Image 1 (tube, one colour):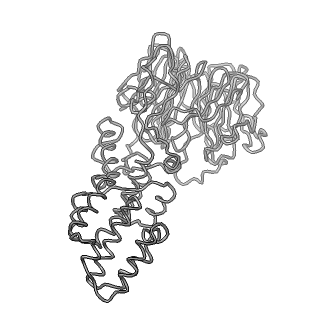
Image 2: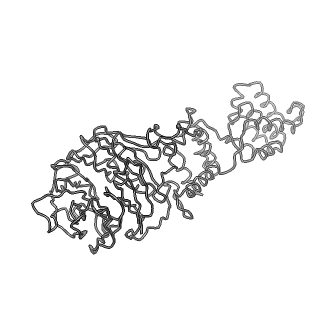
Image 3: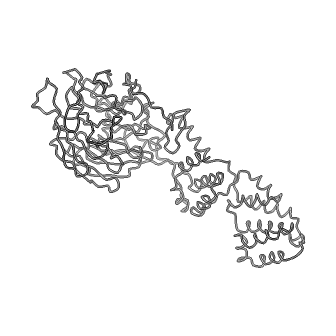
Length: 567
């Protein structure tokens, strides 16, 4: 089962090897500190699994799949032995009936006391002499580890076997010390049984199967599909044809004094994470609008959090890490599976962080801020690497072009600046034109400047980049990096029709915009036509985010809701 082998080894952390060598335990449930307030949970409780047991699962898998060299190496490095058999009665029956080829093969995977192993090998050697298999008896006596140890520790017993080896006849009464060989076999079997445990076969694959069934039951994995065990997602996920939403399917309602300031989906589509005005970072199931309780730290009432409002967040490309930025300019990086903070930038900015994105290789985090700058921070170094300056007011968004060569920022000063990502030098400043009914002498804040997904047939070079610019007007412009307007999208309303946020569908077919009238406007990018509107909130919509592969658009709003819309 080569496919099963790949999946099984991927499911076990190799870190358990060193822990087992130290006699440690591997924690199954890990969470941050308890947090007071609205979501305080019970005292933290974790379930632990002995690292040695994890190693034994791997050893059993190696044994069952003929990976003998891997098994031997793992036993040597971890100092953990399998010491289990599928059937203890079967092994004991093999011993009492003298099926020594089967017995010696079985004990090669076991770690038995030296005296038990020596008694076993002595019995096998004597019985080989009895049937005049002299060469085999000699090989067992002189070349096996238990007998070499006997030669050093019990020389008299070893020399007696050597003398029996040289005799031309075999006397059972002398060789077996007056006991029937069946009696000696029985005694050896009893001695072995005290040190051997019984384990059902294929325990690793059985545990993985049970875990997958539970995740399907909990709605984490889709039912009746082939699962990529390593990534924890459906292997053959069917992409939906892009359609604009027509209804609110589920809504998360926050507490009376709280509301979401930001939200995003993970690239693998498993998580939707929100950052709140009270500093909480929470992971949601977008299908049920419930907290993800399969994350043990949330189950126990512990959460990722900041001291002040969380106003920007983004996932790394592999969905493993989450970067969050807060009102006080602090940037944190979390491991979502455990809730552990793995990197902290105490002063990523002098003021609040308005936008967070990752570089293409997830080695850097690009942030925008109320302090008028955008900055790139190294994940490994934990330091700010570059600063992009040129705006005279808040920077509301900062993104990389698809090839990572340029950084594009949008600001409340009414401008979009294109920077060289490597040198941080500005290349071009773009001022989006206002709609005809507004004064051309006034600069209108740029709420967001987003790079469009790569169209089919294009190379992905930044020279081909198309940017959607959302200003605080009733018009959104699609522009190139030279500042040319390629297409415009209008709400058609002069009162409460100004746009506050935008998001683009993953394939670039739809442009979604939230306006001051609390509605979601759905535009066809191909035609520029307004196809659908949907009221998503009772108060101001703060922002939008789109699922990476499903027709789900989430709106986070100042009325304390996170609304999941779909067709």
